[in-house]
Length: 148
Image 1: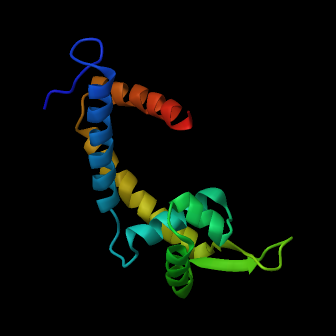
Image 2: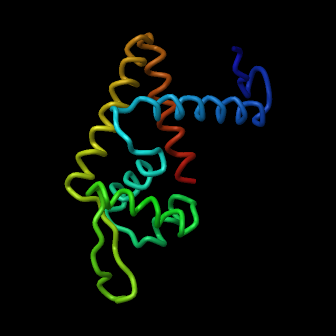
């Protein structure tokens, strides 16, 4: 497939479309590279958000995951049943709780991350050194865009 290049072949809109589609396909493929388990993508995403944030209220987690609070309640319930998430009292608001990944939750998250990284590293190993360098530069640019 020919990818539009802003300077040579097309517009920023065409590049945006091609880049977005490539990122979506890669993300979908990386998400499929996971150890055998019964965690759903939503549960794994919530666990990842807790791992990255350290601790969140259920409402904050719902906001981060862009789901409604009742949906997050179900997700957290399943994670709690598996011992992957724990609730602790909120330090200043007795009506709320704080959610955090348990030691077991962090271990499960690490297994998923390892499986994904191994899959991607295998794919990258098949590229030329120049292609890997291009991706390293693209990674820095994508980080910059994601922080904007």
